[in-house]
Length: 382
Length: 136
Image 1 (cartoon, helix red, strand yellow):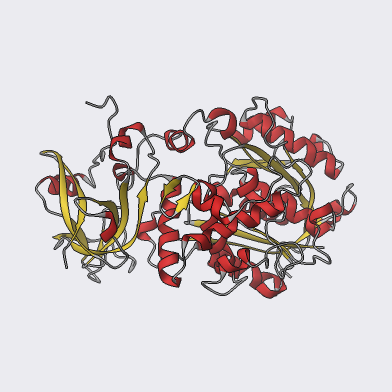
Image 2: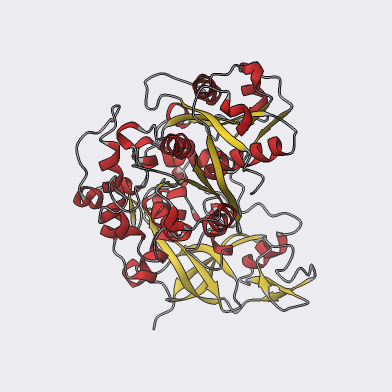
């Protein structure tokens, strides 16, 4: 028993990805929220809490109020998290804690950003320009987001004697899942050679080691298991949840390329009374190839140094020992941090369609932010 | 002349002496008065939880923990320098910091390679620590 035992995810929704219309981060959150409410079969007046993230391309000082207003939610609880890729899972955890303590009964958790529409031209420069120059120990040296992950990739390759083609297998595996989707943008397979021939971004990471930049919106309804049972969709329980934190700057992290992921996942497994080998299907943060590799290793889903071979040998494919990022993940669908959660819920319900992993009893969702300073892992099931 | 200006450190009351010393080619670290651990001025409390530090000069030598050659810049101001190298360096005193490796051949780079601090002096109050490979 844990505080999450009596709680459930009762609805999920996603804004349409890669569509040719301009939407604000608020529009995207609202689009996803309306779908999640429809999935749960509830209306705004059934919700009394709103937890959002903080969009980078569309910043706002009080974003959760803006979303709550648009949806006409009378909130007893409203806040915007600022935890980047860990925000969606943390949002579910904080919502669950608020419900368990009686502060709210049904909370909308959503995450969205309009980076596709608002980041014009060079996306690396646009992402950088989304905040003022402010980090004296990084900015003067010309650091980029891909360069942060490149520093991790170089250290990981050095430690295990790996090569750039080992990283490239992650993008190839993501494409295999992504191209099967009904709304796939790219239907053809991807080759290792194509990844290795794509433009260098920050060595060893090439363009196809990095996710595309997109708009996105995702939303979940978190409520008590008791209430969820009266709602429209099959409730999914939170079996275990954990957050892990370490220093913000990569240079302050002693055990490069270790992640906060390890700490968060450990707590989630302990809470659930499960071990990594119990996971039937995993959705992990894969904005960069190295991020997905480190996620598998740090969560404990494979041995250290084995992460890349899991992707290249088909172990993460549908039908493999550990189907991972079953829709194609961020590598396919853009930097939609929350993409892991609706799919993890659908897998736990047994409603993931062509992506469904047979008898998926333990469905994992993972995110990181910072880029490596904070992490959250959820274990979901019936 | 480029119309774009690279970001410079913005000294605060707490970090001003660090950047000013770099302008005099001195890399100053904070040494914990309790346990002796060294830190950059980003840390205000030691891992032993003590809050008193004394400023000590680093010998300016260290090794590469990781590095990347950047081919896509974060800002037009960096475009003229592409590709450039960013590295995480561990100083002999145990402190790690991020910086650029300059005045060095890319083919000679590697994790574990020894480096020495060199300084980019912007004016008399502001310097930035950079590093170059030490020849074996």
